[in-house]
Length: 355
Ligand SMILES: [Zn+2]
Image 1: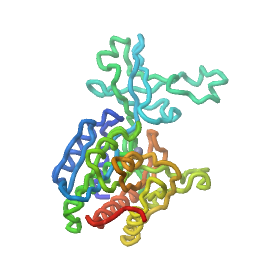
Image 2 (image 1 turned 90 degrees about the vertical axis):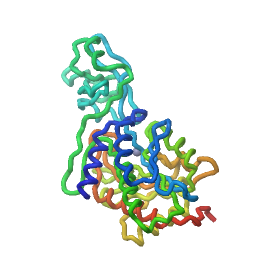
Image 3 (image 1 turned 30 degrees about the vertical axis):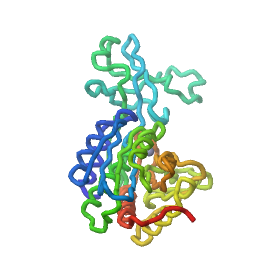
């Protein structure tokens, strides 16, 4: 991976963006795409749209959500401990003992505390704790002391940092879906310089908000754009860890290239074009099958207005929604290539109606 792309990725990961609090990463995305896009807008929910060919009659929408799972402070006790609930789906077992940033007027370091193992009852050894069993300790001496820096309603993010893991992997928090945002940023840069892009195809490359709590940003941004076709680029649950059973949920491996979903959320014409693109450009990909609705922005975009031809591309990710998500750099590269090549093949007279 180009070192400048790696730097953008690290900056996106370092920027806190729990659902509803996406502004820090939205600012980075906006600044990055500004020199390349013909138009950059931010809507009232906070979705950022970078557009190539804004007046083109055929509109393609790229949805890469900017938000991440996190927490929000809902109570401060007399001793100055913070109590919190989750923003999005988080795994409590991976959070105990983690360092966090509480985003008050300044970021405040805290740790997620739980009673010590030395005080466990026998039932504590077998029961999974819930968020109600945890608190955040910021080293405050009292409620008044805590309230000098923290207010109820402040968001919280895990403090885990980005690191390379072996030769081809990386570990960090919130790769879901800063990786999808990175691919979007790189797509805008590439499309702006590629003369294969048809002038009558408009590319609306979005960092969407609030995906983790129900794809709320993609819904409103998509309504305004009224795209003819769309791709959701998100992370897919890799099942290449010990004791995983592909018989139960299908296979998705790190290093095998992006997953291309087939199922009700995928338009058959768009699916064929994605597979044809990957084959012609010799880009590795993995076939995925989704029986129900897709847990991505594609779910809501497909049902907008009179319907949109949607597809889902998943970058394989281990340990999703934990402090240590693991991704393969080659899969990110392959996904950038696939989406870029796909966009270059779009023509204004294409018809995505399945017949
Ligand atoms: Zn996601």
